[in-house]
Figure 1 (cartoon, rainbow, N blue to C red):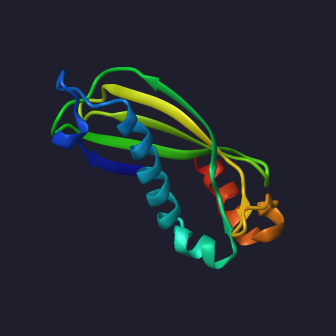
Figure 2: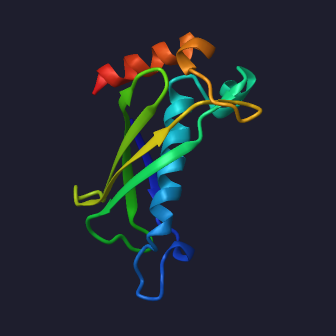
Figure 3: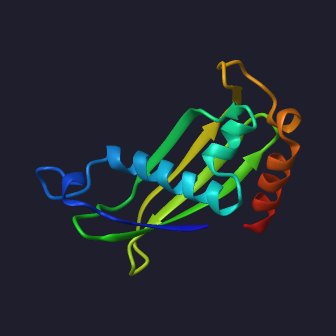
Length: 136
């Protein structure tokens, strides 16, 4: 799924390039957007009684981006087994230059923070994630 982000001036460093920490924020922005587009915004997940914290990040910085660049972030489900969910991300400039690739892994917890199996807690959500994995 596609999400667009315009690099803001405050996201750049002294050298005029995007500070590396922002790519992690953009991963989250695109993931939140992805879930909303498939009908599962964060509010709905919380209403169902669970959350999905990040347990691992992998980041590969390929090329720099700079102020005012329009970055298209492609987000998709890479793996999902009912317990662990892995998203993958590719970020590109309009000319197709890849600036970043990465992954985020997530577990599932109830609202008290105790680990749960998402496939048992919310089968509807899990079915939608499995469909999205097949869309690749």
